[in-house]
Length: 339
Image (cartoon, rainbow, N blue to C red; front, side, top):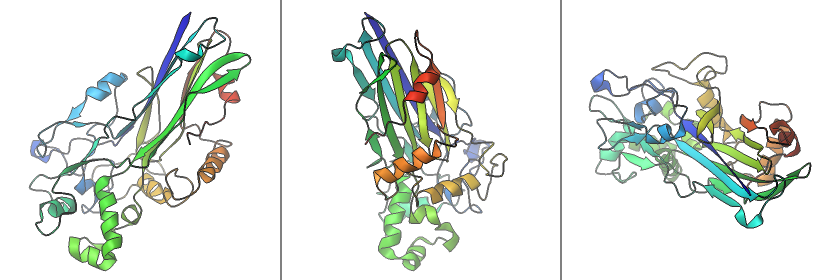
């Protein structure tokens, strides 16, 4: 009897450098646009790194320490995880009772941290500290909003050229809880009263407050009895940066620094606008996002169409087995939607 087990994990990073201005950092030095120092990069802290290590356990242990907080915060935004295992007596068949599927559905999401050294202007922190508004419960960090943003498949049996296997998928996303609350208040108060209440400038309430976008990955893992395995990220939000780890080693990543501008070029500190961010914010309003208000079949049609001419999957990694190759398995198994 042989045991087969493989895991795949996506990690989403919001790149940035030190935002601790008391130690020489720049409070506007991240891949978030700052809109002339009045918006996202002035409101929130990024992850304080521009790349992640090769070992997944190192990623989990990394923390950013800022004077605003009494605890270290994670250096990533989201993690999406699948682990599959089973026994095979002959490298072709599966012992049904041995099949196991694990995800990180019970993991608490990362915090969204509010920028807040005394010398920095920040509308969000001003709202937190006001006695007449209790929008954020007085908290300068809130866990990302992941409600209704997770879909998981079961462990599905597959067969390729007489070799059995198991496949599963998870589509998982999250959004900024502060922005989600602002959206509620924006519609509750109306644009004019919202601006008067917060003191924001009109250009600081663009599409991302009217309809907050979601960071997400659509992760799939297939493991065959002969030892072939294939991890695919069928889709990922165009912002920010995503990594694929297989068996806890970094295997692939999406373009970001070189692609943060659609016309090319890296994001810069004190960046007024970020073209990739704008593309991502607008995505929420059509069928390209799995969390937009539409039918599940609409998103399936979008992915099926998009995969026909690329660049999909967004990330992939496979290892050949005794009889099959990862390429053969990829050709035979279309996207497994986790509805």
